[in-house]
Length: 564
Image (cartoon, rainbow, N blue to C red; front, side, top):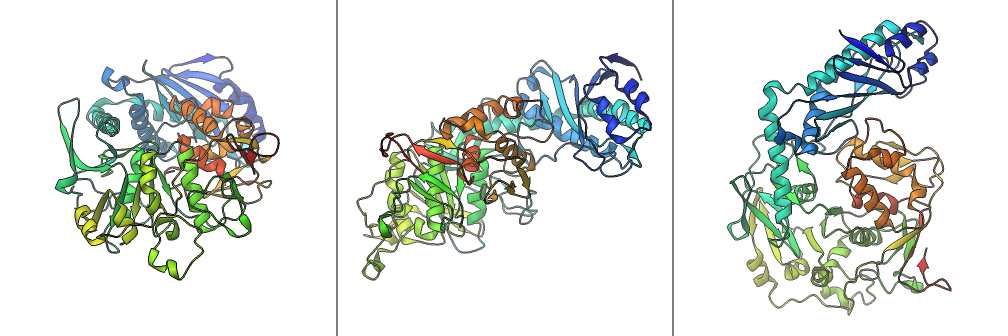
């Protein structure tokens, strides 16, 4: 194998430290060499075989057609999946702890920008890989390490870049990405917030699984809601257009209501071929909102929905460390809108139902009403450019105000809009003189002093964080690498001070959209990060105990602002 040295050569360093204590591996930091046109550089060294693995960066060129280089996001995603498979073949146990591991995060069914592999328009490719440096009795095994770094790693990387007879799968991968991007770009022109393509397989194989359910009933759009979208390469894609305004998905249990709603929400990401949802697309900023009992809230204006509380508690700048189901849902709606969401998806199974609808017939019994539900606010929200998709087995207040009603029966969709209006008859949701108003942007004035935040499962923890942050409610975070990005954000909270949550979140989204993971960390990233949206960043910040905000537009004491 041809090999040339650049700076401190990996092989020469290993020959010097063979048999020494494990910590001597630190001499490898910054060591580089070129092996068969692959540059190998050690950028992080673990201090112990049981510690998190070392990180090695590899650089080379990929020989692909020009049409592939024009779309680096799906190209990177495709190569990342190949690299994951190759590394699993080469990885083996070579001693204690993590010795012998070669790995990148397992990619999910969505095409994401990831720090583990980045392809560029000039054909250059950078990969970052976890490497468990081998040990024998906590001593350096330079022979095994040399085999890993100079043979196994370059071979796995080169094999992943050798497209060969995989050009057709690569083309399908890129065309699936282009199709979804094109449909998303057409939504606004068509007056839609989402699109569900005919033939899509929406059900998953099991709860928590990403694989499509075998023998599932393919989705078919009701004729009255069908939209045809022409694509630049001559095809026409047909499917159900989800119109702006309030869409209610109704029906009995186990007929596919939640499955449809979740597929719409997850349409913020582009899906890989074979996932079944390659033609399910939503506006990029959609959020799935649910109740979060006990969550933290800082100075959120929920007065459109929650008002007239006992003891005159302020809801224009509502703060609490222990929110109820209703206040948490209301706050999450407003926080999502503040972060730029134009589509909110809610399910009566997981949201506070009193935020969704109210039966005015009980007003004679309950005379002190503190909630104006979304069913009464949907029209004025629509005028603000905010659309709702609400799952409800059958609520008259929601049905009477819906712009579109879809009934799911045996996983088949039926347009029941006109029928629902006839059933609703003269019912009109009672208005309480409380029109919806969008929240004011909030400035961050204080952040918690976190030392070593860690994501464990789907919780962000730190010994200086009063209450761990439950990340389950952001169901659009689909990969562990995205949760690791949350952890990275939490380590650099000082960057959010004195600017609005939206500005900070948008800045991070912009960096990650460019594949600039370095800006997030302030240093060379490892392989474990993936892109998140501004709405996801805002989701995290809004739930951090100790992060305090003030509103820009409300008077408060002498400084002209209102805060928590």
